[in-house]
Length: 333
Picture (cartoon, rainbow, N blue to C red):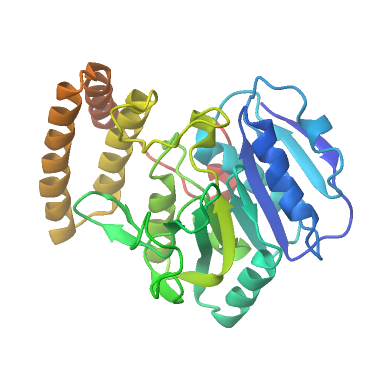
């Protein structure tokens, strides 16, 4: 199913960094370069998600503590990470696993500060740094998050606003952490498993957050450590202008609408109860109608077709059993 290229050193830090690579070698190299200058260079596990590129090893040859895992097929974000998590849990004793998008880079003190936060808040199962746009670090991409039950998605106060507001500078608990930079306790993953394999891309991070909280763990945003994120790098070429996934001009809009529709419905079907379920039914229906009108006016009929296909996929697969036991979740089937 997959191939491992063994190249890791024997010295292990407290944290292993895991990133999923897909046809964006310059981004992955930039990410690795930012880790290589840290005082304690962490183990870096790269899952090559069946990229068309064949030079991953050559591009990362200078990194001193490296594992490359070849998936053999494009597993998507969640299952790709599960493959790396499985290897880390089986082959290392690290305390923390830092899930980091390959189009992101860390500041020199980021990992040390996240480790300090975990030590200071033992009830926290996942912590996250402040995330800013790589192309404009003054803009906030993530500064703490909560669940928007009306939309069935994560909500980030101050998103696309100034990155240095009082809210962005404030440590706090939350209910949503972005999969772009998830710093997770090993014991949490051993307890609840990894990402739900039914989520190819989008909303898998929210589902994991909900499951972690149901298991009794907290989520916490830590303001001091920073990550710079290129954003949607796997969906655009170097130098292209960033477009929101929902933008009618986005060439990948059908892909987004399919997975967003299916995964939000599946997520809320599993986790929303009582008033939260009612909020979602009302809000999601309203916003979906608004999206359909917007895309019809823009001539994006392909997006409407994809949304209907996503709904059909949810209906047909909503009652499939997802095994969350750690030994079974990470088996890629």
